[in-house]
Image 1 (cartoon, rainbow, N blue to C red):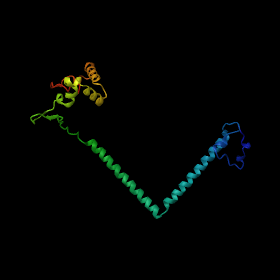
Image 2 (cartoon, rainbow, N blue to C red):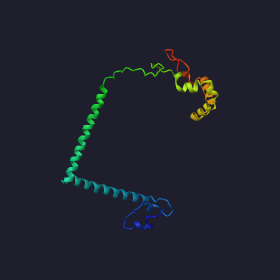
Image 3 (cartoon, rainbow, N blue to C red):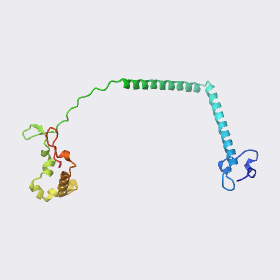
Length: 194
């Protein structure tokens, strides 16, 4: 470890000014120099805080218009915060005292409707939709038509044969039982192909 006498900045009892001045010739931190550095930096920091506190008190005692404005705005802000806190507490107490919400009646979902050939409005049947008529239950002439297969592949990025295979796999897997059974009233669900 370096000795305190070999360090030139200790002359005049000034002590190390930076932490890297505490490193001895062997590369290790000299504990004596480090403790001196810590004491000095603590003393400087304490002195700085005393000066700041003294200036703050002097400014607080001044009766300049600026200081009056600051005091007034601080008091207004404090009063505003008190009012906000009082209202927040009142709302919290009010919510605790609120009776339970009245249950509202649920309405049935709107049914899909369509207009038949005679102009009457009837419930929409999924088996009458364009998708079902074109792709799920196509006519035999469409299945033999190359344009039908090209259009299906272009629209859905999948050959029609693969679509049929996927549909068969899903129907057999049991993962979509909801679309293969009836509801509680006995109405059948929409076909899985849709």
